[in-house]
Amino acid sequence: MKVLTIPVTPFMQNCRVIACESTGKAAIVDPGGDADKIIAVVKQHNLDVDLVLLTHGHLDHVGVSEALAKQFNVDIVGPHIDDTFWLDGLPMQAQMFGFAPHDSFLPHHWLNEGDVVELGELRLQVRHCPGHTPGHVVFYEPASATVLVGDVLFKGSVGRTDFPKGDASQLKHAIKTKLFTLDDETRVLSGHGEDTTIGYEKRNNPFMSGRFG
Image 1 (tube, rainbow, N blue to C red):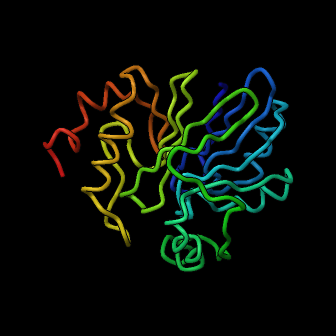
Image 2 (image 1 turned 120 degrees about the vertical axis):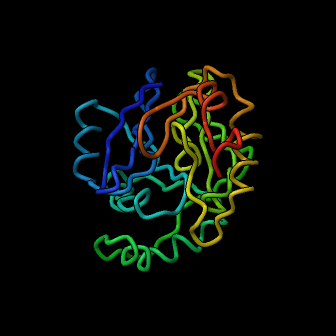
């Protein structure tokens, strides 16, 4: 699996373009902003965009989803339906986070625990990981031992839970049961900051060891 990372928005959100190296089929994961920048990367690598994938409904992860879906004539897929209120509230989010005005939208397809998203020869396993938001999902690609976690887990930290319907205990439970059950070598691609691994976070993440939070 090819992974291209494009930091977008003033929040430096890691939009990821993932692609099946055999077929060139690609998905744009969490396009929070800077559509022109994302389109340029897709064209530079001659990729065939098949999907826009969303981990959760925060504006810095979804801001140009509709623009890219129209640009490439593809569907928006995810997150879980429990994030409906975040997507309905995009106009409010724009004011809250200091973004330009933004209309609400809903995806073409919601995702559930156990779903599999096909992308060329890739099979992305969907795991529902609530806590940062109630409808947050992650995408695990077993062939490359890679998991795209949005804002669930970061290098040395975890997602915020002080937003509406956030839940710290729910988040930690999701990390322990849906992420820390993966092999230690699994690469973790977070929505902000550096990449990490499951093993590193098991050993060093203070929020999961009980030292913080």
